[in-house]
Image (cartoon, rainbow, N blue to C red):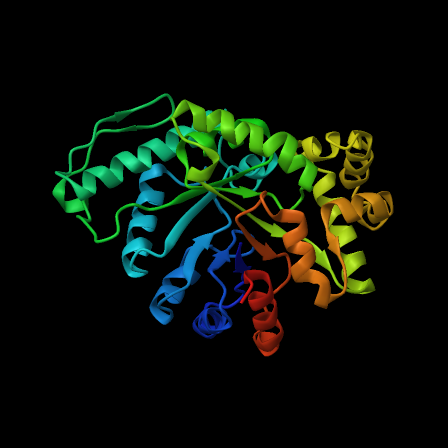
Amino acid sequence: MKLDVGILVPNLLDMPALARAAEDVGFDCLWTSETQHDPFLPLALAAEHTSRIQLGTAIAVAFPRSPTVLAHIAWDLANASRGRFILGLGTQVKAHIERRFAMTWESPAPKLREMILAMRALWQAWQGDGTINFRGEFYKITLMTPFFNPGPIDHPDIPIFIAGVNEHLCRVAGELCQGFHVHPFHTAEYIRQIVLPNIAQGAAKSNRTRADLQLSSHIFVATDDAEREAVRAQISFYASTPSYKAVLDVHGWGAVNEKLGRLAAHGKWDEMPALVSDEMLNAVAIVAPREELPARIKERYAGLLDRVALYLPFVVDEADKWGELVKAVKGA
């Protein structure tokens, strides 16, 4: 099992030191996310200041960008990192696409599937003779003059991971992708019942198997009382989203989603954590002393996930503690 790290980058000036520290600790991949800042800019700096660690987005939101824009960004980062870049994409949810990004929400799984095919057509064109004639339901790309063609690179086979919660995106990942980002709001049983069967169903369409892609996730852990209650609050936020009800339904907790949704709609955030029972908390998060985390992580996720990252901020001043965790999880 690979142990990765997610890094929030409030200031790009901090990224070189963060990236070097993450590589020195021994993490396998450094993931950035699209929350308060752009996810790609930090990785350009990380590529310059590291040599081993993989670099990826977990995730970048796909639909505010065109396939051509994403293809150019990924091409340059793959080249700058000498093949260490992983393009991780997510659809986000309707409210954010329409009200935060001011874009159109439509057919998320088919549209993301087509976006992947369009990007690969562009990469093939740039690595080849420059000719492109991609015509789909959502995207049409038929123009690529030499002036806009970046040309071939040494590492053109860019891995694509996508994120999702429901079965349709699992199937797209199984069919087309090198990896699938399991949402942090998950349980082991949800992975068994929903994710893996649908990954396999999608893979069968392309004569692939589960072994052809990696499953990755940022996982909730809580090692003390303060972390436990912080995780409970974060779970209550995710569990209030209608799109994530599938996770709760596996355990018969669907009614909690509806109650949390009503509270969220009225801005009653402080009342929401109380609806997350200890049973729910322990199903979603690993609650254990820090010294027990490596064993508990492997116990829960062996055979389910290929790579994990903790849903905790990486603190450079605690590099020694992180290093011990890396060695224990990876069996060094």
